[in-house]
Image 1: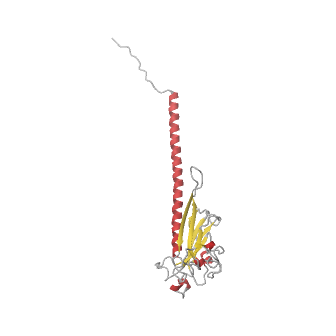
Image 2 (image 1 turned 135 degrees about the horizontal axis):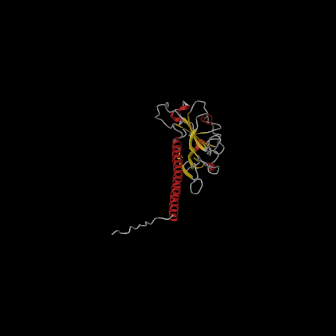
Image 3 (image 1 turned 180 degrees about the vertical axis):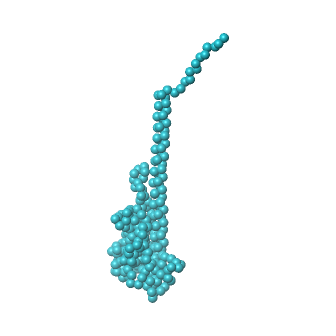
Length: 256
């Protein structure tokens, strides 16, 4: 006796169910890729901020070291050869090495331009004994450079030389810190001056000092305020990311 052969019906997904599942999958995948893209963009932005911070920090540290070393060696070390001693901790123009220039009227030192006179590497074999350099920091703006950039350059002091002209020669100044956004109301350099009438007192801000004290040779402290922007705006807010670093260099070498 034969049993009737029956058919077994297998249940499956309908077309509507497949479309719904596909739509949910596409939504989840799209959200995941959007989140991944946003995270990558934020990572790039944070990396740029970190790089700007590190570059500015290294630059600030170098400026502080140069200011601390300014005025070395003093004239009493070797008064016979002007290339082997620092006439003044800070070279200036006009009237170098005269004293007619006052803080606020000098081209250098100024709010965005500073020339340090020192021997930064006494043990350098390429440097003759007590050789002195002029080290310049100058903020330059487009179209001289692509973005506002603090430049740095160093040249050996020479007999009859001019610190302004010699450090402005072609190829001397090179990019040091980029994307510097200091404004006239936010100078990079400001100064305190010794008070000759009361030397036991702390130095005064140079604008408050007397005319006799407000000269580059009398500068005691250089306050550095460096404001640097990241190359790209923030990925989330679209605002420019700013890093502000401050430091103080104090020259310890005498004027004679």
